[in-house]
Length: 222
Image (cartoon, rainbow, N blue to C red; front, side, top):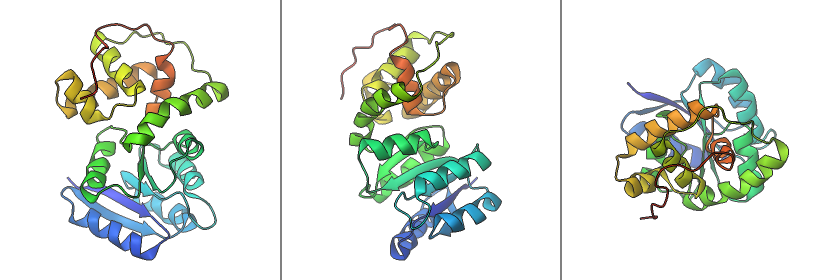
């Protein structure tokens, strides 16, 4: 079954390239593309894509606010930000608005297409340096909305995975460190989200400081 993708990008040439990449990628299909947030807000709810690839720097309403409004209408849709911004403020705002992943526009085509599949499968793909900054974003997150106490303990392996997420490891790096397959890591992360009652990597990492450390969490970055 094809994963339905909507693309929101104001640059016509860049949007044409992204749509072409999506339609040529195995298992993906672009169901709509939009040059502004206003157009996206009007059309995307009717298209019901499973993933929205969203630029931040849009004319008029920006991509973060567009994502926030669309997420309220389409809670099951995943939002993957694709932007030139890599500062903590933009990362924080995007994740708080409901974005599931955050990639920079210099991301290679194959990696971007893999990220679209990953986010639909329950992952939270991030460019490496963005993932490392998530820990800093969490500090701001604590100041705005301190996490509630966690009633359900994680399993030792889930604790290991969360520990590595908090250190900024990518999914593939977690898989290599724990000697498991990437889909297995995705399964662990979905369970972590369910147990912690969170929806994003940032929220999960924010809870990390409040959890007891269990299991062998000393795996090294490959």
